[in-house]
Length: 169
Ligand code: HEC
Image (tube, rainbow, N blue to C red; front, side):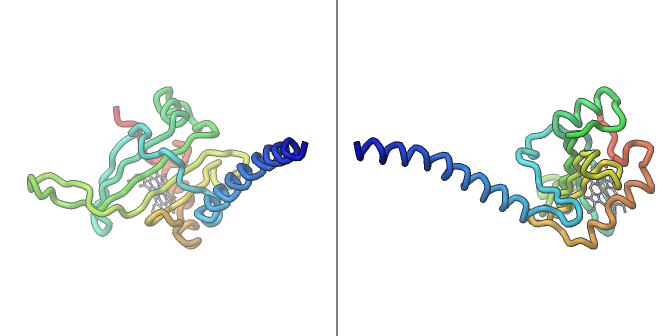
């Protein structure tokens, strides 16, 4: 009898323990969230589809790759504007470095930033429905940097739902 009661008690505790693990994980995630917007680095983004590459000249001198999740890629292909809620765009960036194997070629050097735009029109009504995050070594940049994001995207590409990158076929 006693053994059965113990087993029941242990079974009842199990889901609690599992829940505790999940909530401590999501807390760690929100610690790594961007100021103002609370955007985090989306899981699995490194295997998302390429939207287009980009090259930025001096002083940054960076190679970039913009990737999107399925929702964003579908919207690009269909020409859907504005992007639907759930769209996520990620821009990876590296220092542009001459190839050690073939001089005229440039290759990615050190990683510099990972930048994220998340479409959630209810959560971000004041910034075109987009939440922004800039991460350096996996950690969010400061609030001052996040105050610049929407202003630049709004000033130049408001008519394309605040998104610069066009799909490279
Ligand atoms: C001075 C202008 C400027 C500012 C400020 C800026 N961006 Fe951008 N952003 C660009 C340009 C230009 C692109 C196009 C890709 C490229 O050339 O790197 C871009 C592209 C992006 C993309 C890929 C989707 C797209 O619109 O093409 C993301 C994600 C992004 N920026 C996030 C951010 C975040 C987060 C911040 C703030 C921390 C920010 N940006 C601030 C100019 C800006």
